[in-house]
Length: 196
Image (cartoon, rainbow, N blue to C red; front, side, top):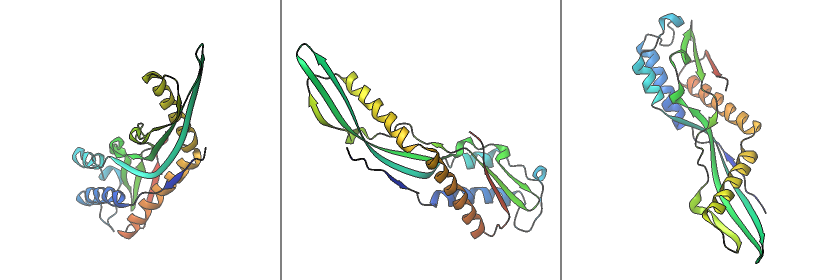
């Protein structure tokens, strides 16, 4: 069964919103370009942190996949088979709701941003409306179909959520954030990802 994998990086629009929120918060606290401040002087208010958390999910990598799942059963009446095709869209990114007070700071003239770990943004990535039976012989219950659903889900996770996919998402996060900050005039930045 041929399988289709497509990997793409989403537009950086949400990144612009993210950085705008960060820069506005920093600017309001006196950390504008050319002003040297320390971390202790650059504390953010709970309201500013909440505004960053409200950005929500920042999608960095989208992977589409098609998987076949099948099962057979032999009984007194003969052999039964069920083969179904599943389609899924898996999205890797950063959930900004996990941002804390210590994640955004200034170290002298360097803007420091510690991003949350890359994660699977939605665990319900199979499009059930597109699921179809490729071959069906015999009687099958809803529990049988649910077992096939989980079989397809495991296949998609194993095929798509790989170290290489995580690395691509991390590269996109660093690249997008650095380009946006540079375009806004911030030449000295330090961007990191917190560990899982």
